[in-house]
Image 1 (cartoon, rainbow, N blue to C red):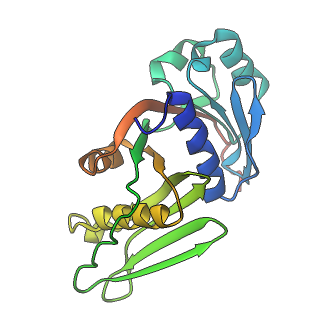
Image 2 (cartoon, one colour):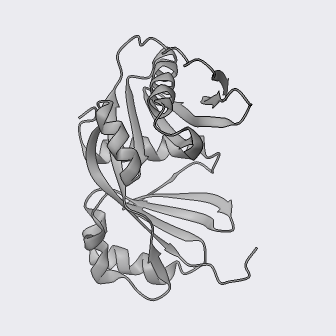
Length: 222
């Protein structure tokens, strides 16, 4: 594993994610961190680090005390760890995984396939990569936030029209190369089941499940 412990990986992921999504700075808590996001469907996120999701008092307190619609809780544990404490009004997010990858000192930026164009820009520690098809439509996109020696890859999305053309691999390797150029030594991300399948083939290691639950927003909320 690129990090000494799962908590180290989770801590790095949280701070990179916050930069990537332009949220407030993570606020330390006895059980992890809280992050203000400020979106209708995601107002605040609490992240429980390894072990704390199995602490009944901690989880029950969060589920009952923070009942505002749009509140999220993420933890580096399997869904069944939270299951005994779930209460009405909370739902599970899709399953996730914390994955890590050590970065080589130098990595070549891969070539772009014929018919596609790559655009890269960096602002405030966040680098975005956009691969466009010949007609200017989206091929694939992704971004990487560098915090200290760690890079967090985020929001990788491939246009369904252009799947199975190697674009996912292209954008991942481009993002990794960009992170290495900025001095990052390790990479971390939160992956879906589908993303995990691709990232594993690229050398990423799964270090923990990533479970999310959220307080539902009533119908009609803008």
